[in-house]
Length: 273
Image 1 (cartoon, one colour):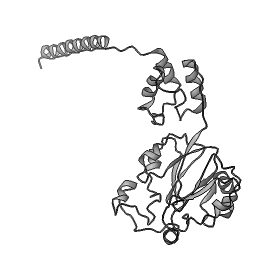
Image 2 (cartoon, rainbow, N blue to C red; image 1 turned 90 degrees about the vertical axis):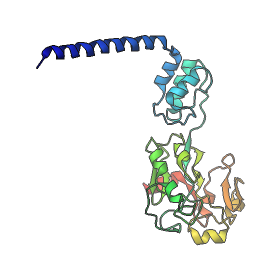
Image 3 (cartoon, rainbow, N blue to C red; image 1 turned 90 degrees about the horizontal axis):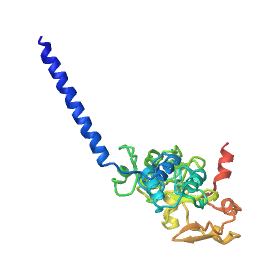
Image 4 (cartoon, rainbow, N blue to C red; image 1 turned 135 degrees about the horizontal axis):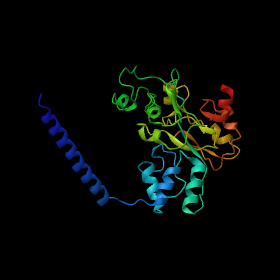
């Protein structure tokens, strides 16, 4: 074996490495973009989830926008009020933290409740299920498909499919709404955390049709609208809607709804415990 050839090869590779390293170092110096110290400080405060709930492309994009004065300081939904306060302090402004918002899936049509169109055996993907007839695996065209696209999109373990319907963990949810983005039905709503009385249906079919396809669908009977002491409920297009600004959360609508689709989320959790 000619060791001189090996030594030459090593020397050549070493020289090439040194040359390329020098070129990269030179290029890094030439193309270096100075980062605003505020941007780096803000980035360090953020939750680091890169969830997109702020409306910007990840934490880096949001930090850059805030540092430039192009974005408010309270958009990091994952970090919440504490992060907003830190970012505001860096920027020397008031955080202006609003009420916490969370995701909510207004559907009560789980397994054994909503009539199925067919037993879907394809990929565990809501969008794929909709390819069969353009609806879903359920007769109700407004129902949660329940194959977990939202659950997989949630980075905070706040969304889980239970009994064929997606459910939100109120305490874990940060309101980033990544779940809503991937829901092909677009039924996931953002609601105030403090609003515990919520309407659990999106079906706008006629009452007679709804009775045939779901045992827990709103039939637009208007009983809740007539008896709400705060006049916070209105039935439109056959569906009861709650005005959160008027609702006093007395729970009367929950007690009188013949279909059981008006829920007190806190009461349900306590009962489950």
